[in-house]
Length: 577
Image 1 (spheres, rainbow, N blue to C red):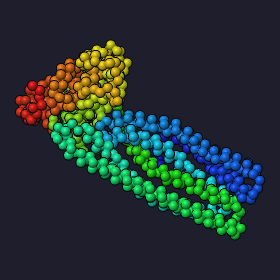
Image 2: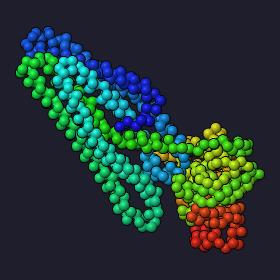
Image 3: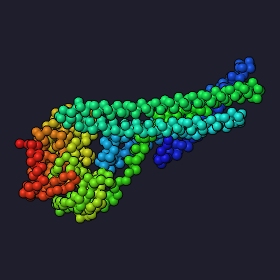
Image 4: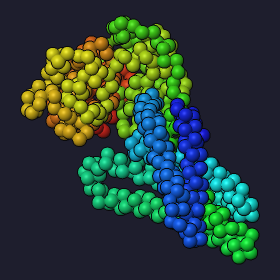
């Protein structure tokens, strides 16, 4: 039930010690509560003076309040640990995703990764809040009650001791069935999350192809599958809860029968019999609470396992192999890839036998059909993916991968859809250089062609954009990404991953005039399927099924009349007039 890695969290041992101490105190208060309530009832039964029940009832009231106060204290002591742990987990998870790059998204699915980072961490918080206290309560309270009952009447204590593991055994069987159902439900939830994100991403394309209504059936099928898995899990949960209630109630009834016969035979007095009968439900209560919350915490446990599995993945080492330099890229620097293989998993190479050499401030175009490996090559150049084979040499130093600290400080990455943070426009532009002056930010925005648009904003650079705030068009988002590149002139390598893929031709042509000045005095890698950009390139890599099938200058490739020319003929309609 508890992932053993939970015990590696900082501060967990202190929480366990305090929880254990408070649970022991709580168990003692439960015993006192049962004893003095029984004393008051027996005194009334014997028709003694009302004054004789005052003291027992006061002790009962104090024990009752103290019992529940212990629960409040346990939650109060646990919450700071849980809150700080989940915050650290979220930060570590996001940092790990950044280190691992697109490989983890390719393997797990975008929707699943997003679900882990958002709802998954929230479920972990609920799981940690509940599971620590429940397990300690289960491990301490019943045994203290059992010891006290054994001191009063050993036969009833023996029966409780024998019946306890039988109930647990039965609950384990149901718990394993519930775990299997919950695992399938969580897998269905991951599939639904991935499907939902993929549907949102592909909705414009589906509408253009007239397949959006047809695809609705597929969405319904996935949702219905998840509903059935959820209902199956709830069925097991309700069955196990009913079974547990039935067996514990039956056990308490048997104890009551034994005590009744004991009272009739004068082998036990009324007071101890009443104390045992009062304590019997509390003996089973930790097990019932644990079982009731078991199903509520299964998703939290699954989420914790998934997050910890991501956090324990190996990340590239030797990140300081490439020596730091100022400036970080010069006209005399070279980057050489020699027979490099790259893949998102160890068993499959997406890029095979990639070899090329670039020097200084070149503009390198990367073209190919969809699925040819353009984005994978950009991810390799950005250090998100490590080679499975081959050699990479940067600035005369052979490196195992490009996830080098010095290399990371040398480039700006501009994807298809640049991420805009929920922050002001100024903060978004100054993402790479937060200490930049307002003057520098304004100049970068002007060079990116944002001045006219900013003039229409009510708060100018202070306007909040990004999630939940002012919407930004695709062209404006790309200009903001360009402004980031203009603002940080020390980064002389630009990596473009189909930056205009989602823009119409008119917007792209307008944006192109802004982008071309950025290319000056930079090493540019520009992956695209819009071939009109190749007219601006100094060197072109033609990819097909993960291999570089041609490379050279545009004139050389045109003269070869090979793959490059065929691509131009197939995609001629995409070039603007």
